[in-house]
Length: 478
Image: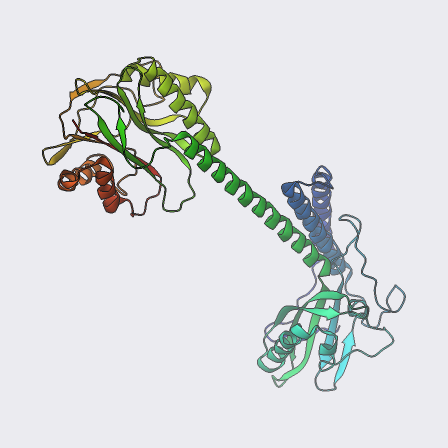
């Protein structure tokens, strides 16, 4: 194609052979490196991640082949517009070779349409790209849309019109319908050529066959989507298993529970697990209430760090160990010490925090210990306050250090509130205690632990929470 004046700049001069040869050498070295890594990936595998990686390597090699061929054309210069194709006349077969076995993407042709003489000039490669007989005359701009897919004709018409009328560059793709009915994708870039009077005299364009490139990109997209779907399926399965394990581990009772079941003095207990707002996090928060063999009652709440099946499994182990030690008569302080050591020794998820209480109904005595957990709240006489906390290390900081315990004597009508972090959204520490203590008037009007729990849920259960939470309410009935 002869040099011409474009709409916004003069024709650029080709670079010297030395710099282009250097770029070609760099490109070919990179091709070799990428191909070497590609050969180390499985060629036929059922793993979506392996297929995705293989598709990306294929795409990268196709693009490097394309770059290599383009640089060679830049070094050697374009062939004459009248050059005959090297292959036999007729439509080019839709062949596909493996990456590294030859340029499949580098088929680039050029054309110029003279608006003053209504003449067109095509390169030999453009005939092959458009499946045209090289002996036939080039198509005019009015005839070119006849080769284009029906859905893409408006796009091509808009690009050409914008170039000729508004002097806008062309940069877009369209699909060609080949004689055998198959589809080829072509990328077209062009500019208007202005005459001496400033009007559009002709339009030149470079057309590139990008069919194989688009195929590679689709393969990457499909393998990526497959990998994403597999990850989503795995996440849903893990969430379901963790939720089922949580339901199996947490106490099966619903509503209120009276402990111990025999005797004149009992606790009325109600509890609830509150999921996060998203409903997807299955953490290690728990609550528990158990009648012990000596007539005492075990109450506990707490949580392990993390989420998922592993955490739910660790929670099951922890609750089982806690129940076993409590049944054997282990007091809350030593029990918390043993649990912390157990989790540290078994490599289970770390104890985020925990609270363990042992209540003796005959004396209404409460002994409790905690490991970095919010302290219980005691409601009595229309007011509520946090109990004085015993000493004890933070979970995981000193596995061999013992946990202290505190003792409290309860009265008939007292209400204990145990909860994990996150019960009061956006509030922790003293701010959370104040909000919960403000429920004292509603608790006073409630007759059962279940009514107290419902009053709490009306206040905080519908709030947006980032993490799940557990709450347990125990009322001294007599």
